Length: 116
Image 1 (cartoon, rainbow, N blue to C red):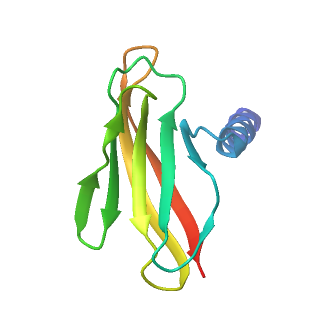
Image 2: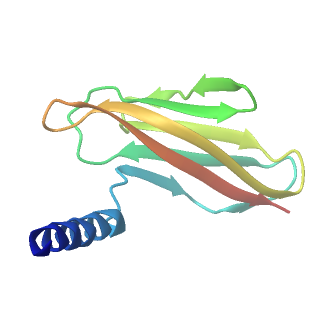
């Protein structure tokens, strides 16, 4: 009984420590997070800690998934959208890449901005 308690307690401690660490390898850079109607919002998406030559960034909208264009010179994906309606805009996506250990990974991300 004592051994079971120690094992369970150790597992809970290790699990909670693991959950608190952010493992996001996606960096989203934008000049601002607020745009006007008909203005273009632009963001650059980078994968940190990767040896992948061309990571694939996808954004899901409604029932479609779009592959974002990749700027090979800057080594980032480029997201552009026109502010068509007022309010908070939020789009979810994911990136597929090969990490430094040569393992293929999939990382989720979220792009958020506001149209005023």
